[in-house]
Amino acid sequence: MKRFILLALFSTLFFPTPSQSDTNHFGAGGVFELDLGDSEIPLTPKQEKEQKLLEEQLKKKRQQSSDQ
Image 1 (spheres, one colour):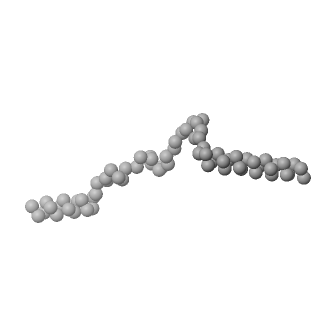
Image 2 (image 1 turned 180 degrees about the horizontal axis):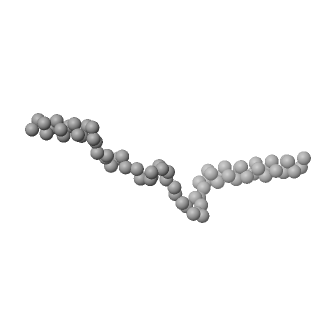
Image 3 (image 1 turned 30 degrees about the vertical axis):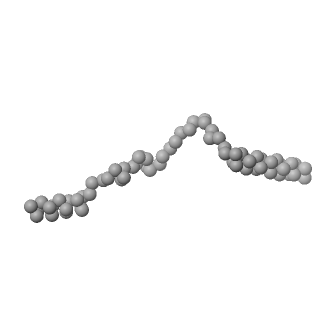
């Protein structure tokens, strides 16, 4: 009986079975690709303000460079 317990202990220590947390759902390469097609993710109000501000700054720079 002691041999069986020692054999079981030895086999679990040196030959562990993979647990569910070890599974890799991203494939062999480890890269997850999400194809959204042509869909667009809507901007938050803060992002919209930043986008408008950047566009205005870009317009000003273009006007300044064309005026010179």
